[in-house]
Image 1 (tube, one colour):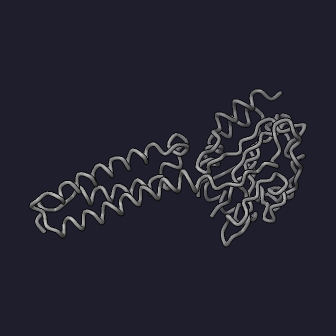
Image 2 (tube, chains in turn green, purple; image 1 turned 120 degrees about the vertical axis):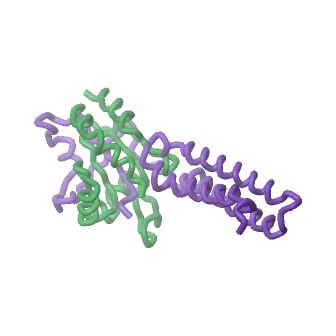
Image 3 (cartoon, helix red, strand yellow; image 1 turned 30 degrees about the vertical axis):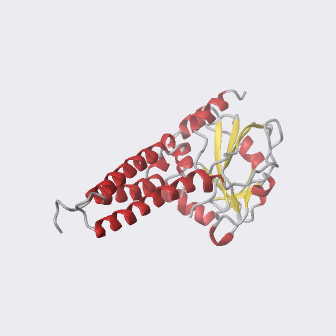
Length: 113
Length: 150
């Protein structure tokens, strides 16, 4: 439903590449569903599938029973990770309808060496 | 129906309240400026409620029938309920998210993972952090967790 955040990242993809940042989207959707979704909407960056909420659990982002048929899904969250694997910026929104802006993330990206 | 007697303010107010509700999810959510705070929708609701009030004032004029008073009251109540439903969806239900206290914080190591991409290829965070972008070493990876496509 609310994938306007993903769309805004796709729009600024060239800017992300220019500063050396690789956006990666992660959800519980299977690769098939993600493939259909990305092709339909025209997303070209990496989409990863975590149907068993393994990575989502490791990042403590499980939203229990919030998906279709009461499945566990990920709550919205963004992390900027530097090449050494250290988190440099986090956004855990308190309201589902409020999301990070690409401009904000690009600003942070510029501070990475 | 006599068009001059028709209480258009009430009906317009009601329809506008429905539009004010739906337009957030179908239109305004796509633009960060109207998504992060629903000011456009709140403005529409203010107009809708103003119309409903005008409609009520008209319906409760002495010469109007009891039927028009009852209709205007019911329709106005429904309009206000739509508004309340919107406020609830955005301000209350929107905050029903897990706290995620154990999420990695700034300065901490991001947990590694290996997941499947849309080409059915296994990809790890370590690979994402080292694979070149336009022939250059990446400066970082932006992980965007989302609820899924449904």
